[in-house]
Amino acid sequence: MPLTRRSFIQMVPASAAALALTSGAKAAEPIHHVTVLGGGFAGCTVAKYLRMWSNGEIAVTLIEPNSNHVSCIMSNLILNKRLKTTDLTFEYNDLQVKYGVEVVHDRALRIRGPQKQLRLKNAGWVNYDSLVVATGIQFDKIPGLVPSKVPHAWIAGGQTNNLRNKIIRMPDTGTFVMTIPKAPYRCPPGPYERACIVADILGRRSGYLDGTGNVAPRVIVLDANPGIMAEKGTFTSAFNDLYGDIIEYIPDAQVESVDSDNLIVNTSQGSFAGDVLNVIPNHGAQNILKVSGLTGDSRWADVDPVTYASTNTLFQDVYVIGDTQGTSQPKSGHMANAQAKICADSIIRTAHGLSSYTEERLQNITTNSACFSPITYDEASWLTAVYSYNPDTGSMGLVPGSLGEAHNWSSRNFNDMFTWSDNLFADTFK
Amino acid sequence: MRVISIKISGTLLIASAILMLPLSTAVAEDQTVNRMIASQCAQCHGTNGYARGSYPDLGGDEAKDLADHLYDMKGEDRPSDIMDHQALGYTDDQIRRIAQYYSTLPENGGD
Ligand SMILES: Cc1cc2nc3c(=O)[nH]c(=O)nc-3n(C[C@H](O)[C@H](O)[C@H](O)COP(=O)(O)OP(=O)(O)OC[C@H]3O[C@@H](n4cnc5c(N)ncnc54)[C@H](O)[C@@H]3O)c2cc1C
Image (cartoon, rainbow over all chains, first blue to last red; front, side, top):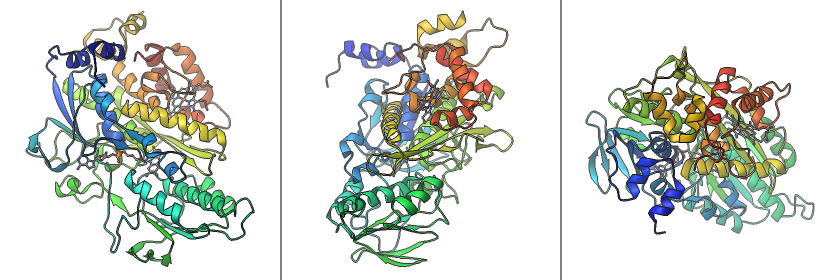
């Protein structure tokens, strides 16, 4: 879309600096430059809020290998065709045009903390002033696992379509086998939600749920954890009652290996064969953080939740937000967005020579999370929680009473789910 | 009075205005802190409190009304809605700050 100065002015009347950037006039010299790695929920939110809150005083370059982002949030609804991939695909146009973020399509390969340098696949070594790492997750290797044959569909996009197509082609009364990674993992209620969606798809298709078919399809859920990790009430009742004949839930099942040709998963609770196999491997921070030494011995990158700065002293001015960071807060997109705002505020303060550790600020560091889970074709549940900083422990803690889950799944929640995601997507990408 | 003059100039100017100008009030409250905590509502109520769809807008509300609303929800005997749990996540002073901040924003999010 050709962008005229006029249309731009209509879009952002308040941001004088952003205006200047795109209208051809010379922009004011930025006071600081921030490089952001990863254009997902965390990276896009931090880029947008850095620009918006600094009134254009901070220049932001976002580095992301893909030309757009496919949201994992709501992606289980691609499996039952309530949504298409295009419904969950977000372009980087708004960040560029409305907020003046520079977007570079490249992949980070390594970070040199002491030198404040970054190696990109195409551009080679470049310097950074401040670096925000928001690269999401990477899966552990599992012997025999071939992701095209046994999809995870836990990073949305081609993998999600792959899994959907396999479900479409499987027998109506066949067996779907899925595995749940060891916590902490991306989206605590997500795998249980997926089990419900698949049980609903097969239960309808076979006629078992409405009584027109008498053979129940099977959904075998192999959980590496000792029990259901989120919305326990909701999922226990969905697994036992609503889908009681379809879902079989097996806790404490650690995946050992996979036979991707014969669709068999070998676990500490035995071997399971399915018509479709959906293995979601354990995951941690991206490999580039490990090879760069940023994560040290941890699975995730440890940070100070006052700023989201890395606690690794070799990495000054490096911040880590979203699923990649290692606080005990849940790994969700809503939460990634929340952390990005704390981080943006801190970077702006630092650029102005102001402390992030004032008493007033320390008393007001909060984040929150929300997940909506579709349970049937047109009903959903939800989960929400607020976290706040505890200066005594130096960590984020759940605020008592704020943790809540829907009393029951309902069509009202299902509709609310779309309003919530619409707002979250807009606050992140638009 | 301070609030009114800020409101006209829009969201983005508040931070710099407060950071740079000495305030006449006895206790200068850090508006960037209020902005940070208020932004935690934006995932559901939209950037700068300008919501899409059926969720209510927060920008431009009277500070007292917005705060009272949240105190009410926080005080529910049996919290059941998402918002009841959200309200329980904040101290009374945090709610006051959030409400104060949204009252300085234009109703349409300034966007
Ligand atoms: C089925 C499912 C349902 C979910 N439902 C919910 C929900 O209801 N609510 C909720 O809040 N969350 C939900 N989530 C979780 C949510 O999707 C994640 O928590 C969120 O995406 C994390 O954001 P992030 O920015 O850390 O990572 P991502 O959004 O994954 O973004 C990471 C980005 O970094 C890029 N990247 C990776 N490596 C590099 C590199 N080397 N260099 C540069 N860029 C790189 C990637 O391409 C990607 O764009 C769900 C997840 C799934 C799978």
